[in-house]
Image (cartoon, rainbow, N blue to C red):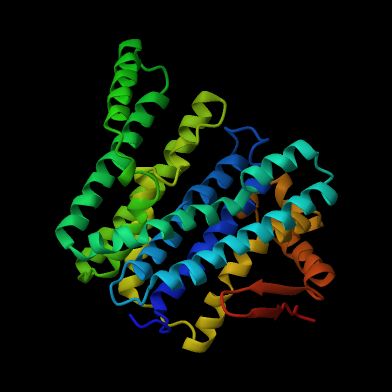
Length: 367
């Protein structure tokens, strides 16, 4: 993989992943936490949120596919002076921007602002996380080059980072589990804690899986199997989260975790499907421009969602999430959407900060 060469399917994955990020944040902004959890409205939001949980794992897999590839030119100087510095600078600048915006525009309190400054403002948590993976990349690259060691690492991650924790969470969340089962579960979790397998926990498994999958070559028959796993993972995430929440009467979203086994199935299937299908929707130039704007979209989209949330179209959607099945509601939704576009998006200049330059994309509306 040459340094400056773009890989088309990775660019398509970037676009699909950022769409998933936006979908999650839009769903949670539509009164997600303030609805009757047994209602159709909330279940529809649960559908879109659960369907999009692949987004962060796919972004991590993209990084792993690039940075762990031995053909990728990654010297110590480039790692620290280019890639890590870019992440750190972006993080610090946007932390200040969002904390200032939260305090002045949203009239937030100083205590919360201080918590954001010490920790991370909402979506910005991803930047220090990926910086941590960059820091250990020089240790993981030699491991990734040896297929047997790589597969052993992924096997440990599968068992101890994804499969066992998800199984234990399901037992714990199941309605009215027997007391002896709860006691046995607690004892087993303490035993797992004593193993202390931090090396394969967290997002490192996705990082390594990204490189592993990037080297895979599948037949069409295997692709069908992978896509079936995608449906299984998404269906289990959506169905079990909705059922457990409705049964409990309060949120039971443990399976939304990016380290859920079902999210792993969904994320892996999305990555492998686009890798094999290699879509050709746009020219290389257009695709490169779109994918190059993903970082800017990631950084700015919460601001756009917040201000669009004050428009009539958003208030309409927030009042009734079941608009997907209501024709009259869809007609009204389309009318208000056109009105909102005319009022807001016509003059809007969307500024996307990318790795190499600043893209200014003017959003034009139909006259």
